[in-house]
Length: 316
Image (cartoon, rainbow, N blue to C red; front, side, top):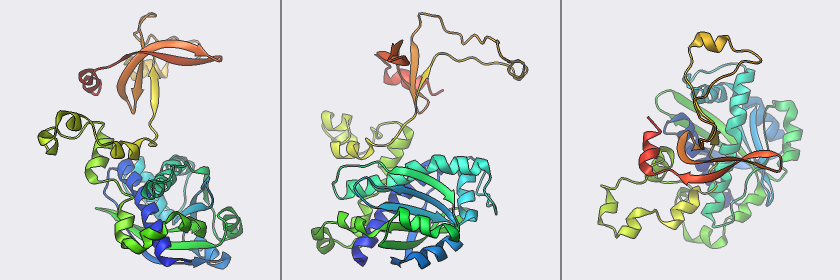
């Protein structure tokens, strides 16, 4: 094991993961790697005894990663995502598992994207993403999935005011090959790991959906530069997944009418037959279009991109 390379991998990957936690929970997470060692099957079994909940994924170019958490810590994270506060539990219910399942791909994917961007490699999407409450008995299966030789990075994390926890990042030693030899010789571990994290301003722009404040540093820039972010910053976010929704219409109904709905009920969505369908991205209106059929599936042909003013109005 190359300790310096593995530390860079662990820091870079975890920064990507906690960037997503920041966005999902609207908190500011900090993490710190407490120790980093090689992990054999017996060590993995001991780790699963303390951190039985596992998020895991394969990396297309080789190797795999797994995040291990205690049930108490991961149930608190799930509760935060659901807007219920940092509520810890002794057991995970179906709702918790469903929420954690939805968190797994963006978290594991963000960590992988951070590493690939850090070392200027083609971005890859994680494969065979899975979550499970494993426990020591599943150590052999997890070791086979990763596979050996493995590196174990124990870390702590916190987010004011109520979140304090710990976890383990397990990854294949083959990931050390991502770190260029020149990078190991040229820069401290902390500097290289920090490159994997978007700045606070960039993350704020992504989450808000708005361009940087025109009254800030952009006011002294030429018009072309002030109107669009640098290409390198755009490249960092091109692989972020967003939810696109085609909205036929919408209507407000009293609760009593909703409870009376049943098979055969008709709901008037307040839109004429020839009116265009709206396309929303992360619940923000960006375009309108006509419904079409493509290979026996519904599709949307874009006919209009809405103006920035209309986009802002649609959020009210």
